[in-house]
Length: 118
Image (cartoon, rainbow, N blue to C red; front, top):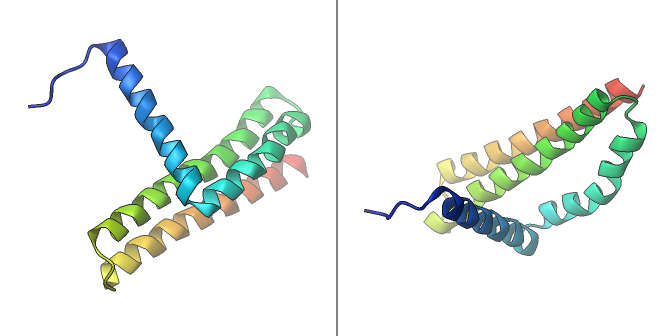
């Protein structure tokens, strides 16, 4: 049985593991690197173009959703690749579904920004 950590110790470990996840995404996932670089422009634009705090939060949230789903898609792909390199219909489907989720987030991002800014 795994030993239980004290709350602050658990928070420390969880933060460390999250940081390792960000580092892995940066190192191995080109799409994530592109999105992080785009964040340098998108995040300040959200603050500049949003007329109210609510608009700014919605603009930022739409972008963060893209990043979050990209990380989840990367996790799916890594898991499928870990299981095996041979072609399997379900493996392909899992990867395609993850990609479709990222695509929908990108559509949501663009649509949200267009609706708020136009």
